[in-house]
Structure formats: C-alpha cells, structure tokens
Length: 318
Image 1: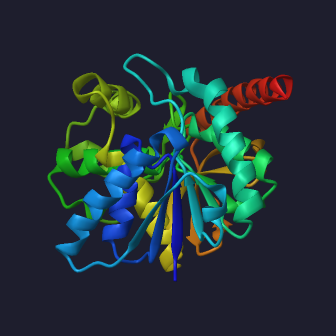
Image 2: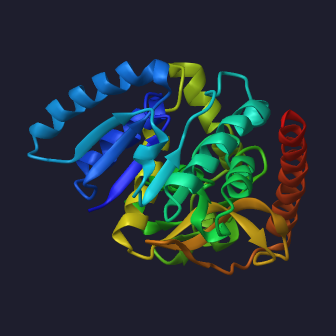
C-alpha cells in the first residue's frame, strides 16, 4: 500500500500530478488535499479522474480532503500549494507569501506524517526547500525540491530536437538555481557517450542562445498559454515514481547542501542525487569547469541571500 498526498491538488500542477501518479498504477491512494473553500473542486476532480481511470481498469483510491489527519501514513507529501507565477514575474517575486504557506504545511506534515518524504514544488523552489526543512525539522535527505529536474529535461529535449536524435542518447544536467542562476553542465554533456564539444564542431550550436532559451523557457510558455502545465507535472510525477519504486535513479533536485559540491553549504540548490524510497541516498560528486564553478557559487550566494531574507520575514510574522 503506497499513499501519496498532494497539497495544492486543485491547482494546475497539483491536479495533473494527481492524475499522472494515479494513472501510473504504482500508488494505492492519493489524498487530494485542498483548502476548505476548494474541497468541492477537489471532489469534482476526483469524480472526473475516476471516470478516466475506469477506462484503464485502474483502482487507485482518490480521497479529497482538507483535514491534516488524512496525511497520516503518506509515503510522500507533495507541497505544490502557493501563488502561481504570472507573465513577467520572477520566481523570487513569490518568495515571501509562498513561504508562509509552505512553512504552515510542512509543520503539519511533520505532525501527521512524520515518516513521509516531503517533495517541494512551490516556487521559488530552492528557497522553499529550505523553508520546508526548517518548519518540518526533518533530515535534509527527506526534504527534496523539484529543483533543476525540469530544466535538465528541457535541455535534454533541446539537444535531441536540434541534433535530430533520440532523447535517450542525450545525457546532460542543469544544476544551481531553478531560475536565473541555473548552470547547464555543458562540459560534461554527452551525446551517445561522446562529449558535446565534438558535436559542436560538426553541428552549428549557439551555446549562449541555448542557455538563454533554457532560462526563459517557463516565461515563454506562460506568455503563450498562461501557465506551465505538462512539463512541470510530468517532471514531478517522475520524481514521485522514482522514490516510490526505489529505483536509485540519479535526478537533479534541490537539496540543502553541507559542503558536498564546491564546499557550498547552508543553502538548497539543484544537484544530482541518487533517489530511493526514503528520499536521498547520496549526493553525487561532480566535476565542473571554472566557468561552471563560478556560476554555481554565484547561485549559492544569491539563493542564500533571499533565503535569509525570507527566514527573517517568517520570524517577524510570528
């Protein structure tokens, strides 16, 4: 019996994640957690999803709830609640208000589901990962932000389409901030096991333009359709499935660091990690060139500064 709770289940990302993991047929129950004023919407979504799941003979239980007690027994609690990003907004614009929501929910998770892994999707996700860690009191290996997993998938997809090859042949990662200070690890990117630099010699690639495209991907989608939806939802669903199935895959997620990467500590950033049923089994050591190292350390400085400001804001509110 595997139980997952989605806090913020009536939002665009929350409802898509709920349906994705229910449809994957690896979860026995999903709690569609919402605010009391949204509980009818959560119920309506569960009825709609049940109709779709019946077409594939899937018997996952969907439980709409606004009671924290229903979180009990969860293997994973996803926190995706918060204000969505609008066109022209940075993820940082959301930090102070969303921190209040994430802190409140993380405390309740600690109370009612102390054995759960907390997965944070609320933006700015690196900051919110630290806020959830503070509020829950959990081990840092049990509080995971979605981080650069989606950014890494976007970069993988870019190279696959640009080079006209199957995406399974592309091995690449983005680390650092899920935002302006993301760091594509181009120095260690390989295509079919061959370093990217040899492909750049044969195929005309504008690396600076690749980075700009990657950084602006979310805003580009928001400007055209109003919100990012499928990419984030599937990336989050992939993270949840990886933990549930205990496959020990290496994914790039946001974690509170203690010197594992270029001696950066006291801040949550996207790094590659081995994931298993209890959260993080190991942070993967990586080698970067000088440019990437400088950019990663800059990301750490920027996110640490914002995180400290948000922490102080929460203290003054209390």
